[in-house]
Image 1 (cartoon, rainbow, N blue to C red):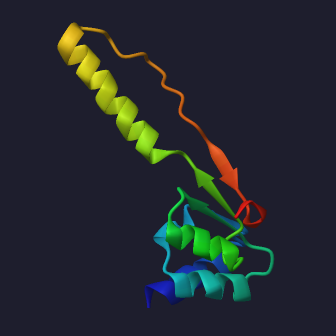
Image 2: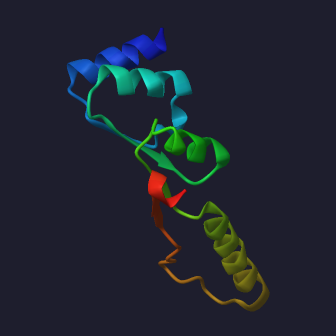
Length: 104
């Protein structure tokens, strides 16, 4: 199965951390925890599933990049440009939060 191949790859290549593990199935996250001591698993963006995984200590942290702010700012910039010709700024900073189980 794909999960077994992924686990084998991680073991063979000494993978010690995975960013955006939200794309992995929950069973695979538990297997990684069991099979790779000390693996560091990072979820992205807060949602009830990620918070639950964090509370269970199945993942180590969540990096929340405020996707609702990113979407809002993109639409607001487009609206301002279309309505009044205001050029969007080249860089748009949005909030970033690092959430640990202690934050829940």
